[in-house]
Length: 180
Image (cartoon, rainbow, N blue to C red; front, side):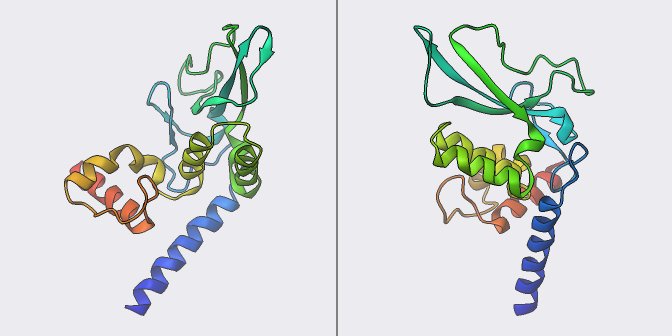
C-alpha cells in the first residue's frame, strides 16, 4: 500500500517537473496530446500553435477594468488549419487582449495566471479553469467528461465540483480510453 502511494506521488512529481521544464514552442502538454481549442474543438498540437485571449468591454470609449471570455484557441498562423478561432478584433464593443500559449506555461506562466487572479484583471473563475487546463496533468482531456463519468459511476466526487483529485482524473482518462 505504501509502495503504491510512493509510486503515485513519484509519477505526479515527474509530470510536474516535466511541465516546469517544458520547451517553448514545441511543448505538447503533459501527455503529448495537446490542448482543445475553445472555438473549434480541434486539437492544438504544439504550444506555438496556441493563443490565450480575453476581452475587456468598451463603453463610451472607456475600457472596462475586468476582462472576460478567457480562452485558449488556435493561433491565426497555426499550421494545423487556416484558423478563424481568435476573437474578431474589429468589434468596437470589446478590446481584445492576448498572449501566446507559451506565456502561460511553466512556473512563470503559472505565476502570470495567478497574478491575473490577484489583480482581478480577468474573472477569477475563468483563470482558475485555465490554470487547471494548463497545469494539472490529464485535466484538459477529461474536463468535458466529468459529469458523464460521475453518472456512469467511474468515480464518486468528494471535492468541490471541477476540483477533482488526480486519481479521479486518471480514472476518467482510463474510462475514456477504454470506451474507444
